[in-house]
Length: 527
Image 1 (cartoon, rainbow, N blue to C red):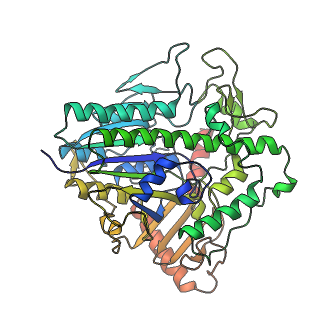
Image 2 (tube, rainbow, N blue to C red):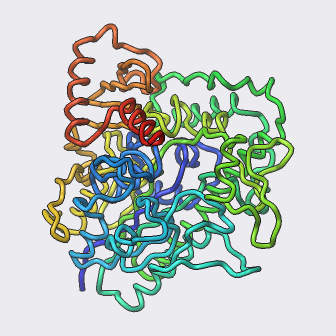
């Protein structure tokens, strides 16, 4: 019998660093809390600030541009920005399948521009034995676009009860149960990719009701309370000061439509709660089939909290494209953030917006899209009873998405290939985190980011970061992780050193200057 561990990789969508209860938040997440108590929490794990680039990096062990997903799902006609997984990359599933693992996926794919085909970059073609989920990104939780089983599109029947978060969880449970019945001698890799809590704000009424009144005191007090809990947990150094409230937002005492504002956060919390319930069922299925102790479970988010407000322009773009104009029962869907309409039901399509994303990312600055700490910091939970000790401990070593692939390979005893279907494969960018799990030094010395011209590089305690189109800023992350004291003027030599590292990385990884890419797009539109 193959004694190598199973691997369950759980990714959620658009959730801030401090939303989970075990990271200081108000959301009831007993199952993730249980994994944290029985495993480890990383305090400095980083994503790449946006959904599909993060997913591409996570699954390939490369930086997003190397995987050809340097931005979103459009083809700009240049390498790095094809909106489709590179033929010179391999996925975790492809490598583990070749090493004898069974491979399963349920949830959001979102790393190909070909939503209706060709299918060479779909999950079944990139290493997964089984797949249920969506090919594209966001959409209704009650009636998602591009819902797919294996390689074929499926449509929900009229009157059929369906909620995407539940369906993702249930399918993962089914895979685990079927595997235990039919392939018990073989280890498995399961990728569970939730869309929760990405907009739209859709949640079950009973879940929303659990948070009634929880956020009525508003964003200012809640941010302060979160910080205090995080300091108490040891997640945040007490010398790091809370970043300011977003300057575009009023103090809670002056905010309009308080009932609607609080309801937005209530629904958002309910979305995470529902995901945690499903993760509980996944844990239970592992336990009941005798596989929990020898399963490495890793949980993380694809970017920080999302400050996107769905206004009139976005509403027009969303309706009829990523969202249907009517529910399956024929009711018109109200698209856009409207304070006269309470979010949550199937016939609404809203987001929780700037003020609550500011809470989600406590105590950091910025959001999804940007590479200040609020955009790239994610909770990261690792649980593996047979492979890790020191239960409930924190790990403070800095790590990044490509390191997940390297960790999976070491755990599985799998070899990273040099070739895939006749194409040379780019070298793995990740470093195994097993030493981090043992509280030893991590081999990764430098971390890099770029998205939409927002870029950063970190070496040791120093982080050089730029919010496009602004100038470089320099922060000492050890003393000021909330990035409030720019030291660039005081340390020009460090700015120059880190700037040189970033330039060399960007050239090697096919990162285009954002202004040049925008100009190229403008000319293409005018042709």
